[in-house]
Image 1 (cartoon, rainbow, N blue to C red):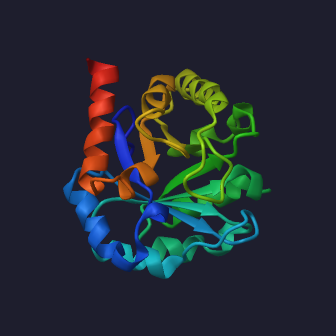
Image 2 (tube, rainbow, N blue to C red):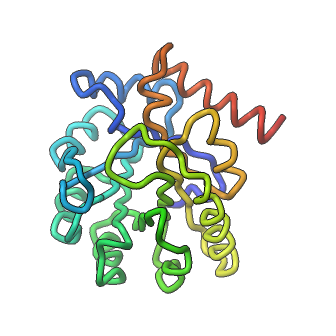
Length: 228
């Protein structure tokens, strides 16, 4: 299943209150989240450690929404079956961590999940040319991966546009996800560049008026800038 051309809000669980994770997932779902983004960090590929399959399994028990699992880890092929079994709907691996990317993407598909590639800010879009036909989703990192709450890198917008054009040239219905520093100030430019899946952490889970207000403010910004 592709959400191609449909704008999707994917609250990032990295910014949630882990003492209230199930409650906050349900609150975000009720407020209109379309899926949940789950960042998996190993302390090797990125300088942080986050969560594992047991957290994905726990989140799956409290929501039927898609779980978008982002593996910021080395040797992701070792863990793909565990995350698929835990309830992942899509699994994205990093271009920079996969020497045999075709094989890894096929493994994700064989496990019954949507296959994705995440690409770091310094990596050119052209590096995905040979695998774009295997992709359901491309995660364009708009910060350097490893920590939540970072400042958005505007120079990554041209990469989103390049990837959208590349997919269009191949007539591939690829969802393009933007991940990092997305908030009311940056979300419109990301969508205008060609992103349709919006990973948003701090601006939703740490909004001063609560999760529902964070989702409402993002949607209002998009309505004003893209429709109004």
